[in-house]
Image (cartoon, rainbow, N blue to C red; front, side, top):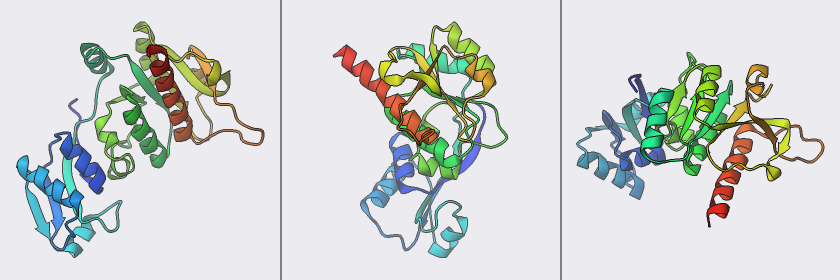
Length: 250
């Protein structure tokens, strides 16, 4: 996890979640005229406990720093180190006796969708998100804000997807491709170690990836609708897996 990205957190909710989790911040900017609501008070308290420098600045000065927000009064500055190798991730999962559960993002482009997927994945308990290496950072001010901090909290692996699929299969993990021609997820056993492959918003899963999945699954829809938003599809399937795991274990 050596790769670092310097990011600023422009969401009180995300900033608070990361502080509660014990993440390290370089500094926090606080508008001198900030309204001291409960969230702001807790942010200041946690930052002081962790000896994070709090820099009070005029509101106008803080506004010039904002990129994603237009009115935030608290901004946190931190180095992101959320960059894992697949081997590191497997080692962590097995050490903690967890069931491997991954998402593989095949060329999903829109930041809002990526962040929404990250947020739901973290809530459900996905072990990691795997994407193809890109010059564009997936962990940004915007993905942090939209995902409520999950973009920094759920392990991220950037590697060749074909190589990732090969390694995942070696570990006995079943790979499901989310595709409109697949079997209905109503009739699919999603329990146990698995990975969901989610395709790009416009073209879906690439042919090469589709050839490598173990099974294609779909979400039934009424006539006239070709597909759902990728973050919605991901949420439906992730929670169906969670439902099946809980139902069969109780």
